[in-house]
Image 1 (cartoon, helix red, strand yellow):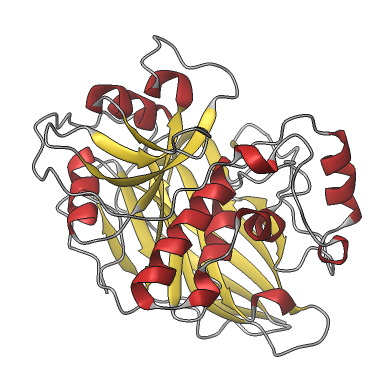
Image 2 (cartoon, one colour):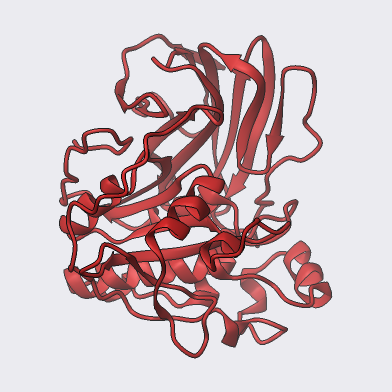
Length: 361
């Protein structure tokens, strides 16, 4: 049975990106729901869908998107990979566009899209329920105004500092009953797994664990690795899989979006919200060009008095807390589409940013 929704959407955005929150009330276990005519107000060529599901471990979700009359599968996701496959879907490229692991990239600007969701229950336990569904549209060729003058400086938050190094090169400790055969095969064959994304997610959740006095949010890096692994990628850097894990906890919300300016990040830090940023590591280290495969995730925790961003960088085993040059970060972040993970309690209201795509309700 397919249920079709034609409804209004909550939209926030700017000329570079736009975030749309979609209704989830009609999405139920065993029903295929199609949300039609999701139409951003910007010219766009890339889109990222994010979701949060309650009762995560008994949930399965297939996410499909139609652009220019062509359907693509963005995710064949499951909360518990020991019960069902959790994967992106490779080999989807045609004249219209291409699925690049966790986003759809079009060959020319797109218009409206349709989104199809299939929520399933896997194994025993309570029925899963979709809590949040967002779509971020962005224009990868649009110029974004520079904003080199710091607006808010000198504030630094204190998430826990966790390096990824102790878990790499075969050192990850996990329970075999919680993983899939595909994970076991990958883990045994990979020489140096990159756990920057789950380490960043762990640090962010740890921040809220302390702030809210909720110890269940203090999950360690191996637990996040198991909760976000993408079998077909393969690896742990799938953006929506990470935010799906972060947002699976009760009364928490997480999604992937793209911002326009560093000033937007300053406002989030000023509001007490750490932000996971996707960057090109080579540019962050002030090298002239990005290197192939140097995508990296870091947790923005503040800004120093000169306006330089301060991070918890999980790639630095000896000293996780690092301050990088503001201009180097601007280039490194821009190379990754100015992509971020936002994770916060539902009770924490984000500031209304002047030119940013975040939910403020």
